Length: 268
Image (cartoon, rainbow, N blue to C red; front, side, top):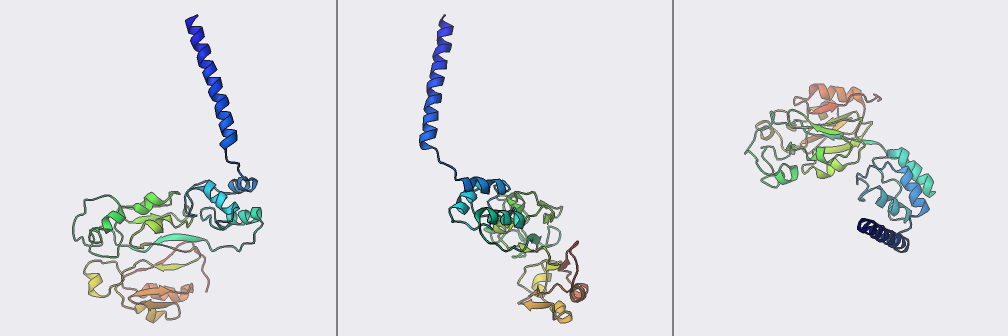
């Protein structure tokens, strides 16, 4: 009998609490706008934060309230953004798909060290200590903060402690770019056929003494392909996709810092 009364009491308490929660949910619950639900159905649900909001739900609410544009979902790309524009009755031009590239080849076997860093395993933390352990003040520090930041698994570290991009998995969200203290990782249009794998601002022996794969500003590439490449300080800048011209520069570059991307259609 005592056990029965105890069970009956617990059931009664549960019923009262359930009714109370139901009333509270009805009274204090936030109604979700119909448009917000429609926007949520279009969004990829990755909650990556690349749009500048903490998640897809927050972004959806911002879009519906007019506080965010309909083309900020980088992870979803043009397809998602065009659908968002249709839901919201907005006009939208297609954006240029982008992909991340690593603008450094100075891994652990290519660049001299000035000291052995034993602090927090994070690129930003390492950079705060005299710019990091590498003698090159511009190169990748190799702690993989970009890998940790990527919600799509599009980055991994290779045996030389350099990040490698899986272009098929990369959405061009730019989160890896934001966490890189040296601007080593950059976004480029997916149609770009070549890029410069170095960000050093130094030239000559200042580069060659510490890194054997860095650009040392010789300018040969700009001389052999002046219509496609110009020098921006000590670094070449590629401003053409004419592979006939770029190929000559790639062949002549003594440091081999001009990287031709694979699987990109060629056109002049």
